[in-house]
Length: 216
Image 1 (cartoon, rainbow, N blue to C red):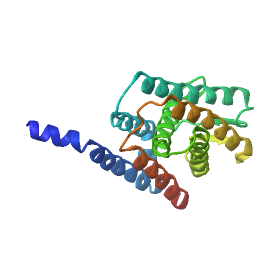
Image 2 (image 1 turned 60 degrees about the vertical axis):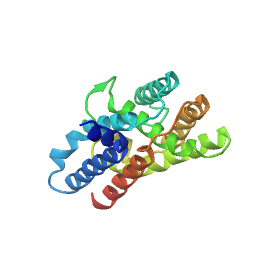
Image 3 (image 1 turned 135 degrees about the vertical axis):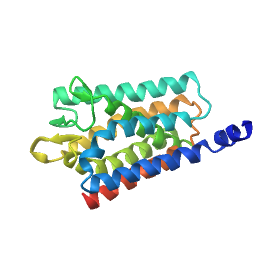
Image 4 (image 1 turned 30 degrees about the vertical axis):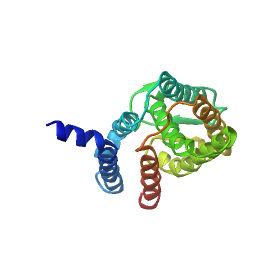
């Protein structure tokens, strides 16, 4: 029994990534076919499972790790609340029903999404021998690049929508600014960032939204 438990712990990253590949593949197939109505309501569940597996594989947990996770979630969620309420930060937009329960008109899943992306991208960039500002810059650019893939699908799948159906340039500028600040904190706190699932999950996100942009 101990042997199997040991093997599970040794290969937990591989098991985690395999599970993520399966659920995102099911998501792509379901959303791209007549099963869309069955699969879409599971979107917030998928996000929570993704971030749970990501954090489960986070190595060397410290108080700073918890601080960064809380900072990413809370900053991401409340900047979305401010964006929806003021209509100034990102532009005029509102959330649909696909992302699940809302607080102040913003799905709680958005905080989960910010946490997920900050830790995925941050872990990937953290091991580069670059100055802090360059790490934050590259990380923020990767966030914006992924958002470019997400935005068209967000409208089609009722994640959120924009006034006139047009994604404003200020959305990407704001995404960059908020991301840059979060990544300054992520790379500046100097906590253990090793995570064997982070890069794989980031690639899965790119493939997921990239394929959906071609099929939906």
